Image (tube, rainbow, N blue to C red; front, side, top):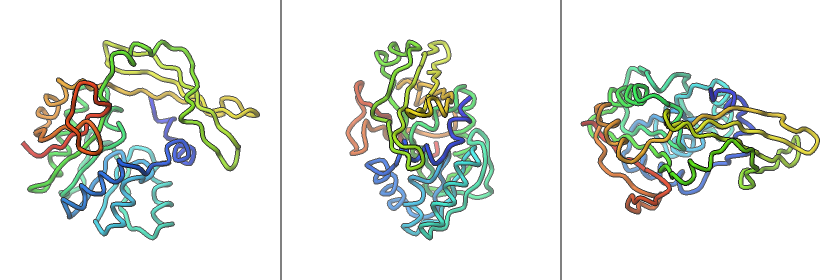
Length: 250
């Protein structure tokens, strides 16, 4: 249900320009681990291209051919070699193992069913070299915020951006929370003054609550080693915005 959201990679990069502490964190983790690196749901390469520029052999897997094409263009522009491959993170076989595997920016939450999450973790487990680490980040669900997902279309001022081809672009989002499925079902609207709703795309994101997360990880043959509440390594707490998870083979 979210494929259309990722069919506009240039607009995606303008709306989410990357950089910041998340890139620094994953880059440092890759350097600490050394060896081969795999990013699942790699998108346009916000984090993998900087890691590859540090000299690590890198593979990026994504479901969207449009996002991968933009990632390849950006890597070529920077003179960085990355192996980009189209695939489904629920079940993949790359025929080799990696020293560092990661999924970032809530991308894991595109998997809505528990069975799909476990299948993803099992696939990751099969691709981990001895001593390898698997790291991912997902938001820490806020019951208050989920309750505010009432279907009303609202402008997200923080996401507005300048498109050189169109001018100022505003971003409106309408969301409802499906509590039974633990999925927030949203519709995103991108508009300019002269071109309202030139992109309208669904985006559906699951919530993984703190107590279920270690169970899902363990069912996939992994062990949750550490869980942080932010990019500087602060301990995970009930009010932390982030679940930053460090895992290894069980």
